[in-house]
Image (cartoon, rainbow, N blue to C red; front, top):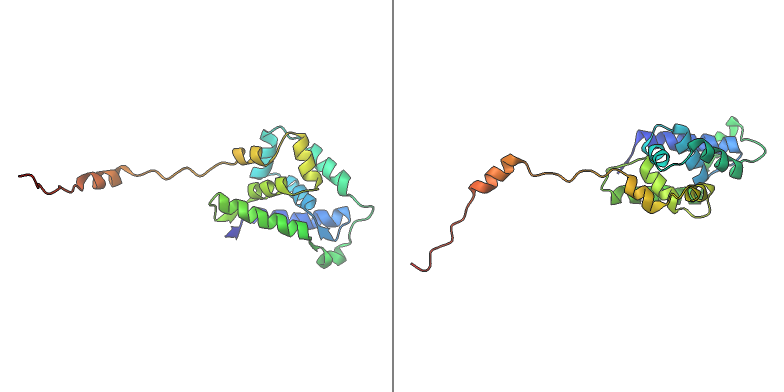
Length: 167
């Protein structure tokens, strides 16, 4: 399974968000801020369509995790994914597999974030009435493959005549 370019960008933004908010550990809330910062993704489209105010979400998450000082760029290599973020990203892979997707995208990460306990992101989504099941229903499904008419014609020409045992 591959990670989409979009999700790679979101993870890079999450590192920057962690540094900006003063954390050496990238948390699920930083992943949420990164989704909101990227903004041109399915996760933001889903949140908006469900009535979430993305700017309000950003400010509320920031307010919950902002520390007094940011991390200097010289220490960027010390900022790493925390245990909870690793678990959240692993869950995003699980969600992509559940959708039979060969690529992990922002909507899979949003599903994973909606299942992550003790985060501002999840609490804020829930305050908007948004949870895993609601997000899940709003993720576009791949249409089921249709049988082509040419295949039906081929199948229609094949006929097996049962032996006439009563003659």
